[in-house]
Length: 462
Image 1 (cartoon, helix red, strand yellow):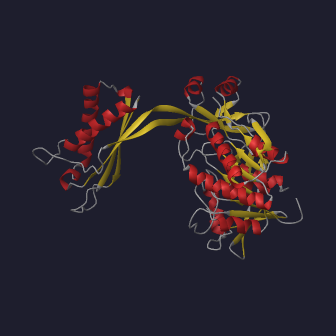
Image 2 (image 1 turned 45 degrees about the vertical axis):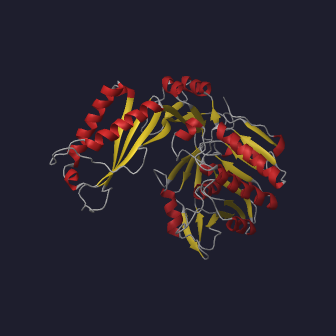
Image 3 (image 1 turned 90 degrees about the horizontal axis):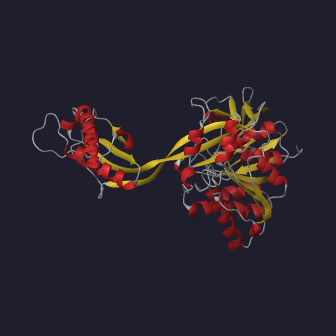
């Protein structure tokens, strides 16, 4: 590692959620030698992997990309985006390439672009399964061939090696498919000569942008400065600061064990890590270790199409109904299922039905309220028309279902929208969250470039 301090900056916690241009420029002015950003994960749910759709606005995504690339090119420092853009599927990655080409053309920018795919084929995963190289994450069942065959799409979570390979080959901008969030910054740190122990732990802190601030007032930049055997975390926005507790607590975020954080190829060991506050709202971190695994494993995610969803939103505040709400709702559910069978010919295996309840029947009623309890009636069926038809049966049945303590015809629900049913479109469910042993950390990840941005051609698989 260089005898001089080395800094890298995370633009924000997730591409498309925004950051201040002034914060990014301040980080570069303080000496940042690289810009990184995670562009997604499994957080928004399985639909975006299965469908390849974007979970955030293309306008917002392009805005963040443009600022990162423009500032990076002005400073002649690399820019890396991981899990582009959302689940890291090839269809989303191709959209990111399209945005970058637009940015280059509109801003008159020239640079070398590398694109790394994280999508894997059904055949690749089936072969790994047949060879006994697949094991489930904790709490899951072993993977079966039928599950592989039923899934819509698969991505593998890459470590820093494919990104580091692209940077060493001369890439100015790297767009990576599904990647470990921390690996994006670990790669940038190691490319700048930072030891893996420090680079990995700093990457884990940087991955969520300004989240380790005492009070993160909005999504923004965060930076790590490496010097000697430690690194310092700071938020370049003067309205935010870090302290020991805020940085230490971030180790509990999304981690089952804050002392052992498993990543592709190894584990970040924080059992001896020391966090020290330094002036200026900064925290110095030392003592972290990265322990390489005996066998390199990557996590594979897959989702499957499970049907189509329609929902009804309603509220209830009738004190007579609420006085015996559990009896009402259980009888209502049974009657809805009977009517779906009678009117639509649906059997229990043909659809999924859930009543989601929000609020309490025990709280004191506001005479003017319509939402003492909020209800969502959810139907999932093989096609959208059937789901909608079943949802309308649910709303009408619940609207007039008898209430104990009340005589005559009743109307129970306050339905705020017309039409009452909202179509949710395709429903995907997680089917695969398994670890696969590999011999080469670069092997499953096909790359394009680095090439001049205008010459890069990347097309979605399938």
